[in-house]
Image 1: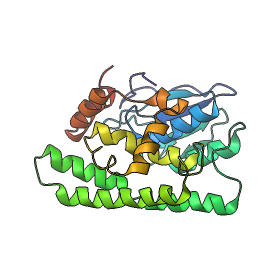
Image 2 (image 1 turned 90 degrees about the horizontal axis):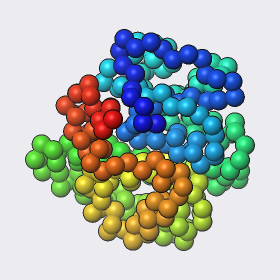
Image 3 (image 1 turned 30 degrees about the vertical axis):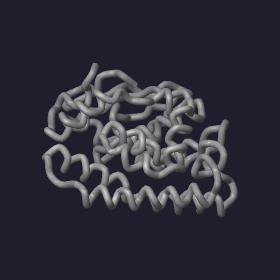
Image 4 (image 1 turned 60 degrees about the horizontal axis):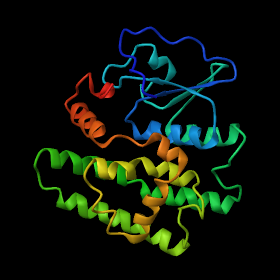
Length: 239
């Protein structure tokens, strides 16, 4: 996971070894982190190829025409892209701990919670950009607070530690990467005002898969600063 990224002009990697799985990722990408969390939680053997998203290899567009990570590739050459799709595929295709509930209603509930979360990523990015430019972001932060309150209400009604129940499940992994970044983007004050959400964040930090993928605060902040400057070195910051 800490290997340097492949950039434009690099040679494509060879075939995926039999019985293994490859994930095309980027060290700081929250969408790719979803996939990596599920791989870790289910104990699936895999290899990681990091892609420089500011200088994408030409061959990578054959893996994903959109040029985005994550992408899964198996030893049969089958390709699966889009973070939520990769996570659901892994849960269905591989044995072990099931992260999505079998009950159709409970599964629908997780998807409805995911929809409640859907505005959070764009609001966080907007807020961070305004902060970096020393512009007023109070309006965006108020919107973010409203979104957190919706999630707080879910946990209050469920009376459980996690969004899917009393143990970590798919919905928790799908939304976690952005909550990890609250502190990294200096936005954590808004989550700490919601008691249940604060407890959820603390519980998530104890999960083995989450622990294995926690990022260094300074590395992420410097990556983000360079990424917003379109630096070709951003994706490999700290290596």
